[in-house]
Figure 1: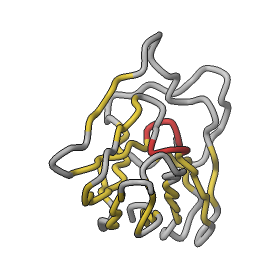
Figure 2: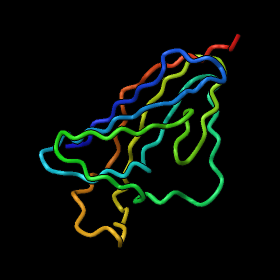
Figure 3: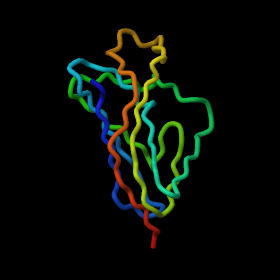
Length: 137
């Protein structure tokens, strides 16, 4: 069974205010699974949303790996709508936010991890959350 993603954000945020986004990942399986938080990305849709890639080397997908027991949950916080690969610029407007967790089938395990829980592979998208960014007064 695939992990379950849920995304949440402020329904209304002032332009320039914090726009932190929270993603909860729950293990809906009956056995422990290994989760790679660095592979969770945000997809933000809206007429004025701007995706700005982060400079520098790629992020290690295995860094921060978590083993989740059955029905256990992990919470990831994306400060100001930024994930490990980019910063989202959100000027005033309406947005739909989706968390995407994708583990490639050909991802090799890190040599430092011995006997990890079962690594779930595939792609899942969370249900969307709405956010409206308003002009600051």
